[in-house]
Length: 345
Image (cartoon, rainbow, N blue to C red; front, side, top):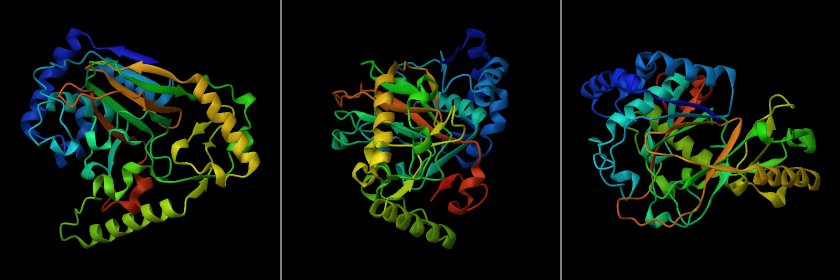
């Protein structure tokens, strides 16, 4: 794991920057803040920027952790009951800004029209109505390991998490591709487009409403309708894709076993897939994120999930923030309203 702990001097250096940004923008979803996040990231302490650039370019590890940013358990208030209860005047704005600047140093931020009402920054917290579902906001069901949004050609390069609260020390489960002995697997077969996958449940209308943000904008209306049709079509007619790609000796991964149709795989493909997933199961480890931790997961070189837990729904449950990051925003241009828009339809 690529790990850095902030010094007191670095926290003192970044504090006035965060205060200024908070005063200027007031809301983490502010369009100007999101547009200028990469510029603001230049004001992070030099050692932090060097550390994040090394992670981005040298790939020393699939997991990167920046620790030590202050989080006061009382000041941030109670863990909300639902992500839609997080208001514009967030008690965690200072943490959100630090998180966004770190993420912007790694790549371009983006969101989905079909996820958490088209917000850029998501809340990961237990929702009682979804407690036994295969969702990040679930709890009693293990969130099975996966790469994020594996069904989509627009999937991000990184998933980033910031811990605000984790009293119960619930593990984020991880497996890096570098921990796998690829010589013992049928890599050639896993590179073939023989593995059908559906969209995960977080993108289905029943879980987010596919936010109606057309705002009398015919381009947005067209993209929204196409987004609905695309998700429904991919769910009804899963596409076959490879689960590995890139360098066969150190491949990138793209899979979400819970949403893959095992019975639709040919026997050789099924065996290769089963051997691969069994290997990941054996290599899976857990990390407990602490308040103030910012964790980056390379979405091409690692899988992640979450251990099951029993939520209390009393305001003290686990609470994370999440960001999606891409190194090439242009890939999704056909599904965004403009070249500067960050929401994928």
